[in-house]
Image (cartoon, rainbow over all chains, first blue to last red; front, side, top):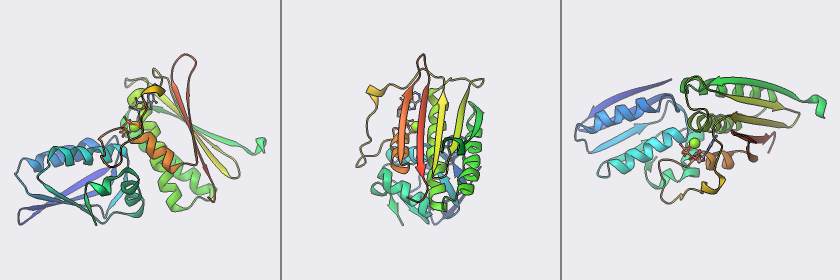
Length: 99
Length: 138
Ligand SMILES: Nc1ncnc2c1ncn2[C@@H]1O[C@H](COP(=O)(O)OP(=O)(O)OP(=O)(O)O)[C@@H](O)[C@H]1O
Ligand SMILES: [Mg+2]
């Protein structure tokens, strides 16, 4: 299960992922982000505080988003240790601002 | 030792929403064996990567299925994920370029990083089996 809560704060978007991103829920993530991108935004902050699980399907989606919207600043915060480890292993910490 | 082994098996449909069942079962098994929380998180990712590949490259339609076996002895958790797809093409596998991450091609690399031992077999006729082992207390 994955829930996504999006908030707009002064033109920057706060996207909170709650639950699990896997092959079943990843389309939900892609769809939400694509809808956001239609709004000509400048930056996105992904809040992972309640993201319990992600695997290569989710990481791949994030890499795809990074490549597709090159002008948008993307920051990712509050990674749990297991998620942070995957980001380190796969080099995602090099292409995202991770805090 | 051989007779201390126990195997728990699942038959899963080629439907994405049931990959989480493989994860849940694994958490239960690994928790019982005494793996710590970090190890269990790693195991969950590894099993999901293997199941996701079985789904993507295995049988191919909603009626297909694949198999997961958890074999436990005192110190090892051995996980087999078997599909009856057209089989993996070893020649085409490459390690990902981590300085330049790509949208795909991460799964097997992640499995190898997280597990202690990984073997991939190609079946005689068709199909792929990936065997992943995690040792307790390493
Ligand atoms: N069960 C399988 N049967 C046949 N081919 C497979 C199987 N598992 C993996 N492969 C092959 O190995 C390649 C690499 O798999 P890997 O999981 O590393 O990456 P991916 O599935 O392409 O992308 P990602 O896992 O990052 O979403 C796949 O593209 C596929 O060609
Ligand atoms: Mg894969």
